Image 1: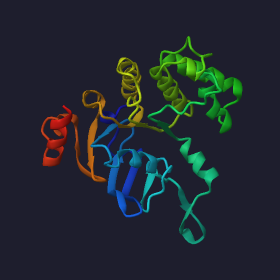
Image 2 (image 1 turned 90 degrees about the vertical axis):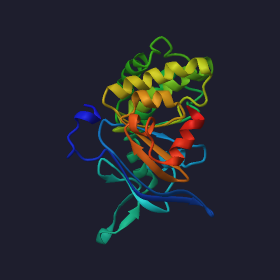
Image 3 (image 1 turned 60 degrees about the horizontal axis):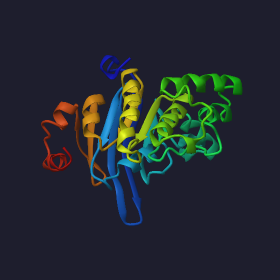
Image 4 (image 1 turned 90 degrees about the horizontal axis):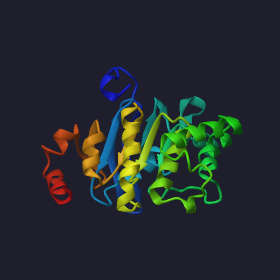
Length: 263
């Protein structure tokens, strides 16, 4: 199912409500509201330092917001109801369990250097108790084949190109069967010749009905895969809408100025 054929009444895959985040006196996120429907591909663009990556880290509760909250499939992330119904911070173990439902693909791969590609992908389902080791290895082989690395299962990260490592990282994110996958500039650390192979895998996910939130500077890629483009500047959502509106007919001068520099 894709975002276009998901019923409008379906619960949101992701809701970000009035999120603020600051470091000292520097406000990084300034009242972010964002709703992502199941199967929707949301691409976030904006200048460096605008808060895009911080927003992803708040969604996954790698960063705690000072104000506001995030919900995935209707469940608040990082907080729960205590006695009397009051919200309280969850234990790290409970937060880790929540994170297993949110895939995260980082800029710099973050693979375990001492594990093969196969074991990197199989590790999380075993660690979380979702699969036995034999089940996890079978799934890992299937996922590595899906991302075009079926012949590299025994390779260690140092023996893989940047593009191959990032494809292993995508397979690893898929291994927990998350409801949503976050991509934080997944091609920014790659050589130009390997960017295409990673974008091709993400395009495949985009057409398979997986809910994706992608931070990227690849505007042509954003135009091709996004159901919705979100432009962030200064920690705020300046505008959002279908690619043909935001990229071709932006309403705000700040969006027009940004696109004039990157297109």
